[in-house]
Image 1: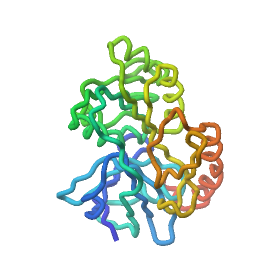
Image 2: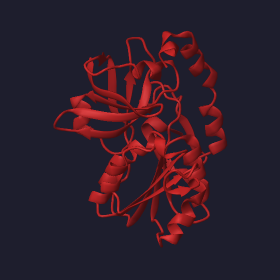
Image 3: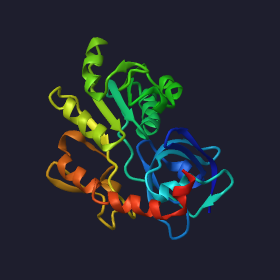
Image 4: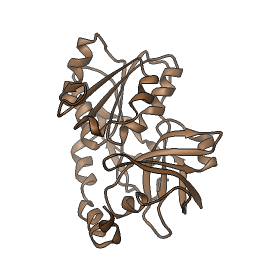
Length: 277
């Protein structure tokens, strides 16, 4: 059993989740993920890793409450335990001195780009971070990201922080600052991954997206997380989760990502979790 060290809602519907898992903390790298279960016989949930403390043996993720299983995670309190915390899984993000790197984050991806920013900075890169949200009330970890970045850009749709706008304004904001990235790395919702890839393609900016498909076992055995990349079938859990965003078949990915939407929501409506939120 794995002890929950912290579980708190940091912005509406997003939770910071820290678990004591020494074996994972010792070996995890930026870009990797873990699979957790909130209870015995429960659903396996993939979560990107957002931070870790090797000495303390703890690992932190940011998760969004969506269905019944994440609602159960959101009810956990420090001191409680979970039966499964498997990882680290997936390939780590490529870290080397690329020159200038732009990190784009939204939603739970704001947390998971942090270890990437930290590692890229340590490798000698100029690191810039672009955060997107509907409003300032959905932003978090800005201080941590600022400490790992050479500059930050923020766009909110309601204009409560940074520039009023969204990811479509990113190229103009960078151009105004005289920044041309050698690499773009994106983590967040599917729309953010896809839209950023569409924006950077005509600019010739190599773009790496951290894919978040439906997963079950996370070790390449079930094939549920397959993604078409450059006309070839890849498994996000073992071949990724990082892929070239310009080679993803986004239409196929979006269709598969939405395929179990009703099944995710229905158990929440029928469970006791619904009465707590």
